[in-house]
Length: 294
Image (cartoon, rainbow, N blue to C red):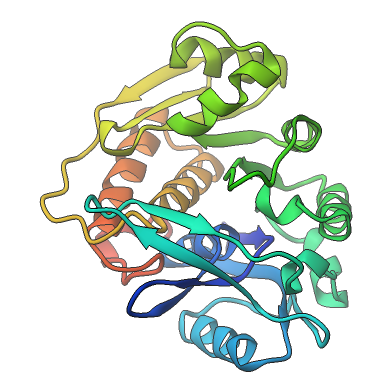
């Protein structure tokens, strides 16, 4: 079997916490975790020509990510977000506007990667600007062979029904959380319990797999003609929840590409996300036992 190439398409940014700055952004977190699980992880984004941008490249290189699809915008600063943690380690975010990933530019390498990737994950946040939205759509259009994962990732007011609907139409796999499904329910006329709402989206947009994460309460996955509920895995000492959802998405993606059973996919994704919650930051070290591609 050839080595899997899996890309995260969208924002690279720093999570600015009270006592530190941690490299992150949902797409690059996803790509990192795909790499730790045994695939080749690639980041496709735009950074600024500044200290944070140089630090981002250095830190992501140390994490073994392919960065040749990252372009540099000399006129806008590298992305960052102010992240605040509550006493349960759950983060809330404030995003500055008009920064480098709002001016996403596919360089020649990124355009070439579109024809090569086995899977690509994209979200809503990076589509808040018209420029980046058009580049993301262009990449997806150039990758007909790729499994396309839409991690909804709603932040602040940076979303609309039009962007969400277009993203769902382009996706093979949907991942969202229990807060997000309630936010979009009025937009799409979703009624009933979480399972019924997710099933409506799954069927309406003809998705291959739909994933609802529920924090400490586990997950619901619909796909392969099955519906699988996982109760979640207790974490004794939560460091923070940053990156846990992205690790979950990476695990599901590789499991689908490897044609694992839905039960196996669900168990591995929940175990991995629990491990990430026990560690600080979005990209902690991942023990070898979690590797899916040997």
